[in-house]
Image 1 (cartoon, rainbow, N blue to C red):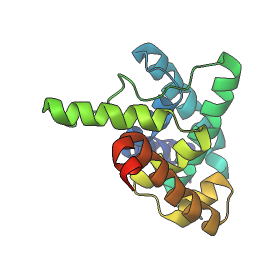
Image 2 (spheres, rainbow, N blue to C red):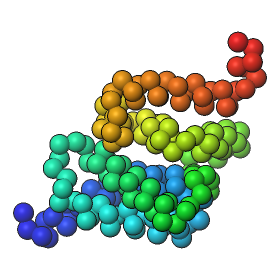
Image 3 (cartoon, helix red, strand yellow):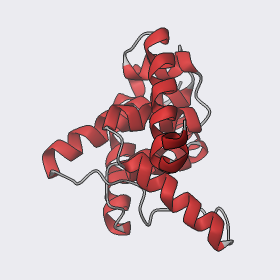
Image 4 (spheres, one colour):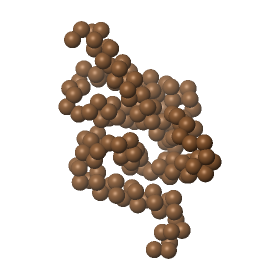
Length: 168
């Protein structure tokens, strides 16, 4: 493969997974747009630098998530970013209805309160990653991820519906 073909394939892969990269970057910042853009660029540079190591043994999205997550964790350590995540960083407008917006904001706030590893697992699950793929990215066993997912969902349910939990 020529250098030009390699570059074209990389650019195509980044364009296909831009939304995923932005979401992972947004998890690690308060989402000041210029900072989000900087983090996105850092992630793309890291992806390019490690592109030669991608053997295609996992889905590109799994590899992209892992590299982007690792890059953001390093950036967070360097910059000592707050990890509130997601506020004001919608990649696309999901709904116009105020009640839906309020509900989404409550979910974002609850997810932002999760420890980083739990947040990563939950967001990957929400993005459609299979349990085995999450396990691969997080360097965990399949069973451990499955158990953590169940616990994370219960924790979020309690955070979002504290009154219902008291009734049980």
